[in-house]
Length: 409
Image 1 (tube, rainbow, N blue to C red):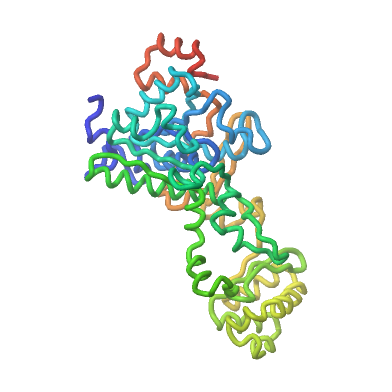
Image 2: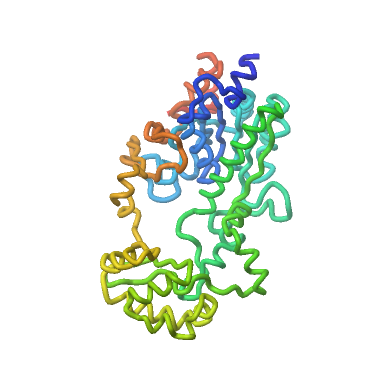
C-alpha cells in the first residue's frame, strides 16, 4: 500500500509525526465536492486545523462564486469559505472526470459532498462505491433535509431551513412578523456541526479501523440551534411566555442598545439606573412571569427612558451597575473595536482579484495559524498540481485537460 495505517491516520494513539495542537489534522487529506456555504465551511475548518483540502469545482465553478456582488472571480461568500484550499476543476458529467474523483477519493481520508440526495451515487461517488476502494474513508453528505425521509428530495436553502426548523417562528420582531436571521446561520451551523462529526469519526477510526458515512442536514442542524425551545413550546401548551422581559433592543439618542436580564436583582438595578424605581415596586412587574404578561406596557416605559441619553452614557451607567448590556455594532464597528483588535478576533486575507477579505477567527483554534491560510483559490488554479500529487503523469494530465474533463486557469 502507498501509505501504511500510521501514515494515513493522523489521529493514531501517539499522533502522526508532524501533527501538533496548532495543526492537529496535518496529513489528513480531504476531497471537498461541496458548493455554497455549509459543506465548504466544514472544509475550511479542516484546512484551518492543518488538513490538505482539495476543492472540486465544476467547469462553471462553485455557485457561491456568483452569489452576491462579484469581485474578480469571487464573491464575499466564496472568498471567505474556501480559504486554505486548492481548487481542482473537474467535469463530473464526463466519465474521465468522475474517474479522477474516484481515484483521488481512494487515497483521501475525508470526502465531502453537498449534492441533492442520490446524485453522488449516480455519479459513482456514493459512499457504497467509494468505501469499497477505501474502507477507511469518512464520507460526509450535506443536504437540506437529509438523505432519508419523505422530504429528502425537496430543494432547500438557508432561509427555508430556518423556516422549517422553527427559527423564523421564534424570531418574531416587534412588528409581529416572523423574520429570518439576517445571516446564513443554518449554513454556517451545519458546517460547524459537520466539522465536529467528522472529528469524532476520525477519532473513532483509530479503534474501529474503518470510516463511516455522516448525514448532516441544514434543517436538523437549525433545529438543534433552538435548544430548549421545543421543550418550552410543548410544556407551555404552544404559547410560551417571552423570557427575561424587559430584555431586548432599544433605541438611544444616537444608536441602539441591547439589554439582557437573567435575575430579579438585575431588573431592580436596571430600574434604578433608569431613574424609575417605581417600575421595581409596581405589582404588575413583580417578577419575570408578570413582566412577561405586561411586556407591552413595561417595554414602552423602558424604551422612553433609554431614548433620553446616548448609547455611551447608558453603557457607562449600566456596566457600573453590573447589568448585561452592549451597543449594537455593525460589522465594520466590530472589526474596529479595541477588544477585537486586542484578542486578534479577526483574520484579514489578501485575495488576488478581490483585495482584503475579512473574517472572524475560528473559535478554539490553538494558534494564529489561520493567518497563514492561503486565500480562496481561483477556479482550477491547482488542477495540474493536484493531479501531479496524485501520481498522474504530464501526458495523462494533458490528455485530461484536452478532453475537457479537467480544467485549469
